[in-house]
Length: 249
Picture 1 (cartoon, helix red, strand yellow):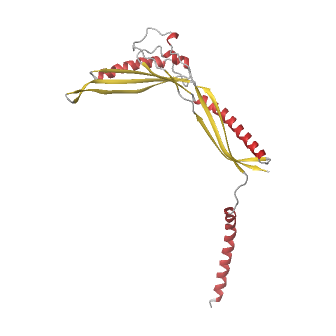
Picture 2 (cartoon, one colour):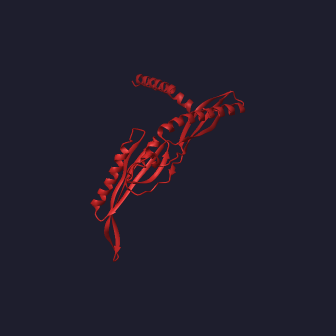
Picture 3 (cartoon, helix red, strand yellow):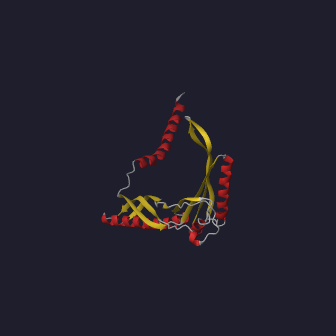
């Protein structure tokens, strides 16, 4: 009585095995696939110098006194005077103005082996930066309530991206030329580009200008001769391409 049920069970097992074989065959073929032959690893780089176009001037003021409120008020007045003058030349992307560190802290002295509060000190900062170099350098001659603590040049995002596009095109052309040259030297006719990595770098140093210290007294009028003499430096934009090509007969 058990025989009629054994035959269908055998047929089902055969059908299931036949259905699994076509699915596993491609996987086995890929696993045993040979690696690509005639691969060549190459690198090419390009570098260009570009003049820095962003001038940054940091103004600072320091005050001290016996009363913390008086020190704070004196710093605020110095900062307000400088801010009012800087805002006159503020323009989007051309001249940016923003405040920096503003701090008031106690001053201690030693007396009989212990620290004793003997006053307060404070400092305030104002940063002016942008691509309008002439306007910013002339502004330095009109701000008398704060000292110039640092001056530097850098490369703007717009200039960096424009130069970077040119350097990338040059590096790509060099990479293709090297690939074609090596392909011919190895006795092949053409090549096919595989995986490629493009690395960019703005390695230009920040050009520093010697800060000018002066008494914090507002000038009666500023002339062009009061402008801070500045000279921009240069940044180096570099692009390196690393990749592989398959040489073809």
